[in-house]
Length: 315
Figure (cartoon, helix red, strand yellow):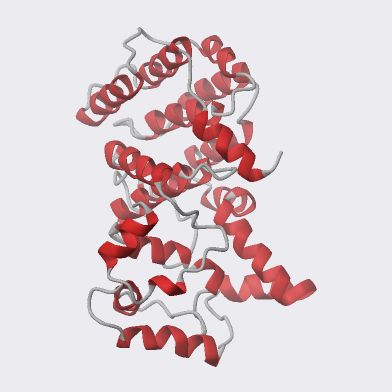
């Protein structure tokens, strides 16, 4: 099955009423005893979205998701609930989620991420996410094509912010600052320079294969603060690339649990994961008419007004 075929099937898939009830009951289970406003609102959102109002769940109910193409979404719902509890993430909650994962016969690697997070092992989380995150795998593939067996050295340079200069590429991105105000390219250039992030082609700049993240910030209008980064994660998760839960877990571990995960310039924060906003961003990504990790040609967009580019891309 090709990735495109798999994606089409995912977008056409729906859960049964029993499955929807199992998810809401599971969320209620993970939030049991937490009467904080965030917990109540998260449960209310689950009930609104799935149209179910069952009682407290049990792990065995997740057997309904064995072999289901969206089983990971059911598991991630529990993980979000566990992380936003007023008391924070506890290993007892991870144990409970592991029981749900066992019943559905999948998702153990995502449970491992959460267990390391509960123990404060940010470096372990980083290692797992680096192997599984779709955007990380894309950057690695691009680096392999360009550098062959020396790819490991290029990865280390990127992590340390020591990438080599590429004058031709650098001038392309610098000249985006000459485009009209309100254009995609000018807005992207402004966002990057304001935040003092080196442009692709500049010494220490991002690899061109990695700029989709910051470009999507520009296109969606999501801020680059902690809340905005969580929304970007939701947007990417909504595209349903294989291993899409990595984006939700990156937001949870970095901006909800305040673990240092990902690039050195990312500032960990507590309590910034807004469930409703992330859900809305996921719906926006789900309905977009472009796939940010594919080889889409973004350059023709750069001179376009932002509103026009958003209409063209369906966002």
